[in-house]
Length: 491
Image (cartoon, rainbow, N blue to C red):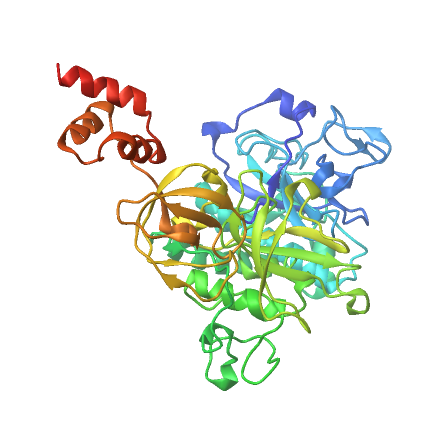
């Protein structure tokens, strides 16, 4: 969704009134601009963790927001502007099925009520920044396209401006956002064409099932022959800057671009600019989030976004999400390591030194988890598991393994975030594993019932005497309970 987050203004009188739209469906969409030179969402949206704190408290999550020094009954459905990191985001502040109080009225009535329109405000700046203008209105167009899919009652001809709503006789006499559009030789027909373009994309996508991909975490370096990291000019697939020989590595941008390609199975629409510019490049059409997801691009800025002199930021790919929210990522570093893994901690907001976390760019596919993508900490030391692989390693980060036989084994150590995060020791029964193994080769051991085990003991499957006791105990079973059941069967 282009709509990045919700921050419902529950204290606003309009939200409290909870007046439902006729049939709970909007008849159209009105685009406004704020008529105040402040592009910061915190001026209007009460979500300090995302947009920053409004130190004056004059956001719209109050009963009557301050408009030109006067408490006013007013509320729209959402705003588009900059968050605390300078990214252009969209925020919903009123449920869509509620009538808003935002366009006033005209000679024929008001689009606030009947017919009721969804209404968004775009936060104005000084109306001279073309980059912000293009980002804000592009995001607005994507929001509208998605709302039109959600609410088929919204037709393109009823995607209008406040000025157009006034001309129809259903709004007060305002000239927004044409006052801003005209600064860049644009008009509402231009905006509607942008919406139409996104409708074509999303309509074609909505008629097909979203692709599902099997996800295996990349915790070891890709082979130098893998075309996802070879430049297109050298016969590869990667369009990012050529770094050395035929490779786009070492470089975080080239690595993340190639890894995203590897995951989604198609050429990414991601930026190929400096890493800190990726999150704000919403024109790529990918959903943004503050919540991690497998295969997502994690983005960081360094210093002022867009100023190469103080750093270019960093991007990495989420390969595993730990139960506590920490993320295990795969990375590359310009002028440094071709490949490495790193864990970023949720408790630190995923920040790391001078790198300030921006957010996640989510993959446009459904991720089907494999065992390897699940955190090793789903198991614990002492668990008896089924080892299904054929290779073990002397170290958790080893690159050369040796052959072994599968079977029952006990977990003796765990090293989250490494290539081979689980250390196993076989429990006999033909298994020879003794070392570090891949997470996907470890499965929860299927537990048998006491009666099943008792019958196996009677058949001699578990040996005799101390051998039987040891094997049952090592497999995670209660020897005394099983032996008691054996004795009952033998009476």
